Image (cartoon, rainbow, N blue to C red; front, side, top):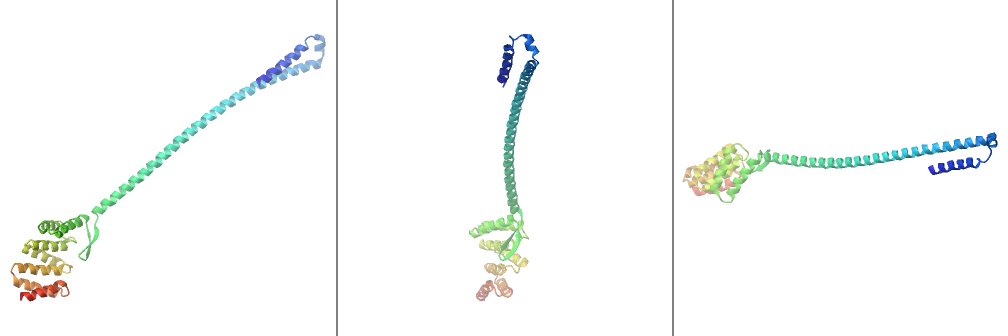
Length: 253
């Protein structure tokens, strides 16, 4: 654009020089010519000034564009940073939720290990602590392997620790049987009688009564054994133990 303005200025100068040989009187007497030259000069000045202003505006526009481009790049960088922060927050939230779930599962597991649970043993349903169930099952497992001498202290300790628990009648029954197997007949009788005293309607009660008679027979106390068998038949007439008691009673006579 500046080249164009320079060319116009050169053209005006050439026109003025071309008119130089003409006499001053003829040139300046011609008002129209003077006005034309003045107008031409004014136009050249205007064009030059306009070109300067256009150049300034162009420079300003370029600077504005550069600033705008810089702002855009800055915004893009900030957006990328925010996106990265958002993704990290999402990962943190996911990790937190996972840890909360693991903690909740751990708490539930620990609660299950200490909270009472419903169990059924020998037809009786009751609430028992997990530790109580574990100890009873452990003692019974030893008994069932035939290690009767080892089962005795396990059941004894169990009854000492849980004397009034739901497992107590069953524990006394198995303790009496372990003592019978180890020929400790007197202690076996004590535990069988304790079962009958606290739980006469227990599923193992008829067997416990029959076992008392067996212990008495082993102790050569036939009279006591006969009395025990007769009481068994009266108390539990429909039980299998009553049938066995009748057979045993017939032999004792």
